[in-house]
Image (cartoon, rainbow, N blue to C red; front, side):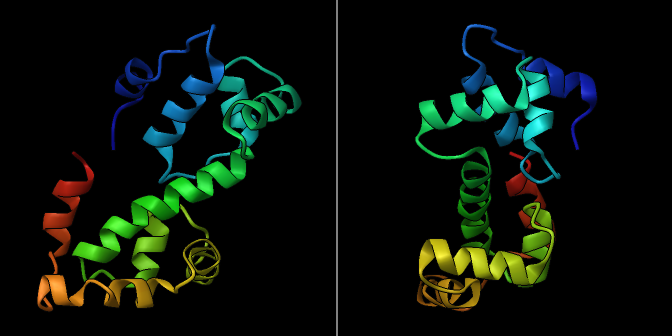
Length: 139
């Protein structure tokens, strides 16, 4: 985990582009519980104004953007690790494995397990162990 000082150095608030700052914030903290209010406060906007501005600039809601980002990151772990789905879902910031699986299927058209099986022939059944994974995720 990065220290608060390191985090603040990476997510300097750009007052001229709060949505870009918010996206960097999501990219750095997606594994933690994040709320719209928290991010809006970070960029010094009211939650309602931030929500409208975020949708206007990205074409999607804040929560949908965060959810899609988490699902995209989880796909990498599903491809290269044998970590249980529950561990991946928790690591990606989802509150439960069942919500993760339902959301993953809604966005990708497959369950996380079905998605993982698509890559079995590439890995010949070999997937990285948790220590190797931690090194990859923290890069």
